[in-house]
Amino acid sequence: MIVTKQGQDRNKPAATIGFWAALLAAVLNLWFVVAFIPYLPILNAPWQGLAAYAASFQPLPFLAWVVPCFFLAPMILTMMTCLQAWTGEEKQTWSLLALVFAVVYATLMSALYYMQMTVVRQNLVNGTTEGLSLWLFGYHNPYNLPQALEAVGYGFLSVSFLFAAPIFEGGKLQQWVRWTFVGFGLSGLVYPISLLFPLPPVLILFDIGALTLLLTLAPVLLALLFQRSKDRVVAVV
Image 1: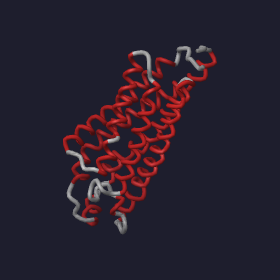
Image 2: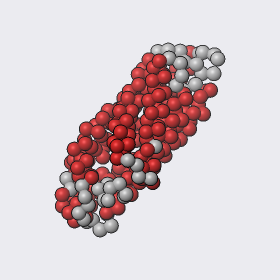
Image 3: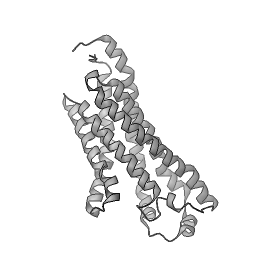
Image 4: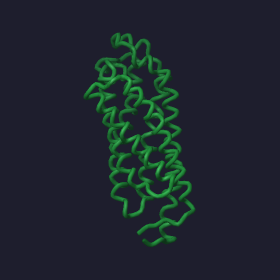
């Protein structure tokens, strides 16, 4: 293995951009959690019909949790792109696979949440609700189009994290990053599985808590790793 200054120069931009992307991903996830908890009673309320749902719809609490979800997708995609550029050649198969699966996640989620911010919100506000039911998160939760798409998207993100995990070896910080990526990857797969096969509510609640923690902790640890690596010589071959 040869260590070069050229490798350091090539990886420093990836580490710098990756640091900010990972940090913003953690912040956006926390923003989502804080805004989503007060919205849970609305989401889980018994379905009383589309007219009643539209009459009680409040745009600002809705946007408060949808907006961070929309921006989280490009931030995670940027983070994974920087990880691909930062990774040494011997492990770029893993980083490339992680990036490819992250692209699918970002594509699905950005389209889904943009439609929620525009098509769904505007139609609910204006009272033009014909044919809108299946596009509502509150419609017979969790069996609606948004949650099905969300489950697929987070399934791809979970696989992305699992593919990225083998990249991290060596020091204690890299081991922490590795296991938080594995933890999120395994926890995230519960979501798509739960729509196919009903799981015990206790398991779902535990999984939600794990996802909330790990999707904040994993990017923070990765940001710290990027930050520490910026001024170091990086192995490239």
